[in-house]
Length: 232
Image (cartoon, rainbow, N blue to C red; front, side, top):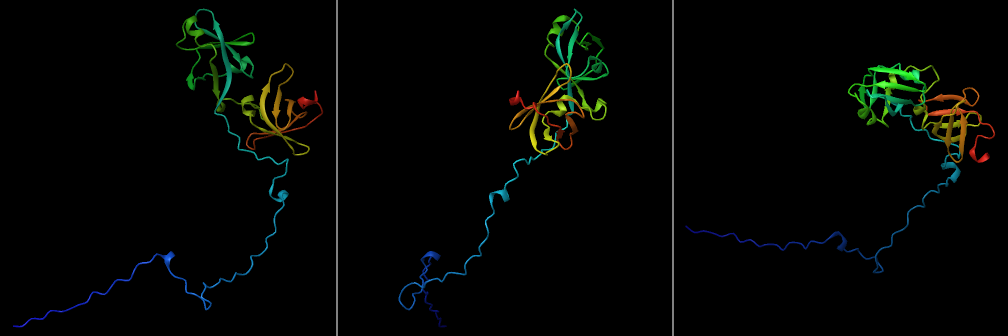
């Protein structure tokens, strides 16, 4: 039986070219065709700097962070030989500290065994502190309360809650700066406000202090001559 063999011819494969090597067909003049420009872009009016900048007296207020704990006293010394502590109240009267059955020390709750007023101090007896050496080791420690455990009259706040408030001139709406510090004085406290200038504003409600809004992070005040420190 005869057999046959199919003959086939392998065609040459086209040479691969990168897109950048593709030839541009010449124009009739032998040069690459020119590309005609598109229609001109529409003219957009430029905004003046005043249109995009905030007014100079505008102030952006961050949400005020509500405090979970309030500092109410600092251990200043030992009292006697049985482990009692001398506590200096911070921003409150000594009687105020005696109202709480739970205090917080280094973030941990402690339950005083006794707590009594002694002149301008509070004498405090804590569990586990039984002698003078243990009491002296507590010197400098800060005692706190939970904010939710304290009931203050409406419109009354702890000093620590006021720090960071934005202070605004109630008459003009201008921002005066941030309440940086509460300075204790016998007659009344002073609020140190720092902005473009520094002010010492008496903490006297309805005379200097118009309103205090922790949620809005704002205190509105009446300004008078002599409150800026550079005026004195």
